Length: 171
Image 1 (cartoon, rainbow, N blue to C red):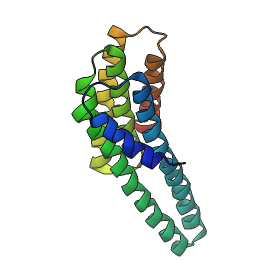
Image 2 (image 1 turned 135 degrees about the vertical axis):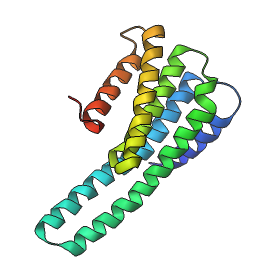
Image 3 (image 1 turned 30 degrees about the horizontal axis):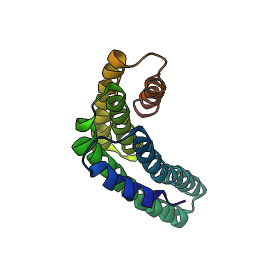
Image 4 (image 1 turned 45 degrees about the horizontal axis):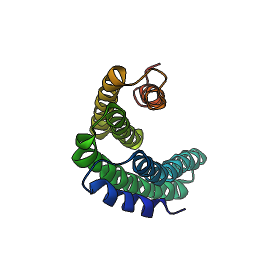
């Protein structure tokens, strides 16, 4: 699985002139989702290991788990920052139709949500605020331009609700 390389290549495609085709847009999404997905899973696993080791009194092992979490967090921060930058600088402004605008705004919100999942304090609050803003913007465009049964609009509703429940702890 070479999603990091795929993400690097799709970043170049995203920076090229012109709007991405639906296929290119989907490849961009798959590349970044998988590059981040494995790291999110690793972070959750290592966070759990850290807590278990602490509860057993194995401070040395808990320290190793925490160090590894820090490494994964820095990788996640870099990848999320790259795709958010690409979306902000190139893709959102170049989107010519409602479907593309919603797709990119949802993507932006998702990557801010991923940051908010592991950050603390002011960083978490900032990422959560930016995610909520992007989800709200995507929802406004979706309401206007996409049918209620459109797959991108449905995906937006699902991810927005996950964000509200998991990050903001709103039932």
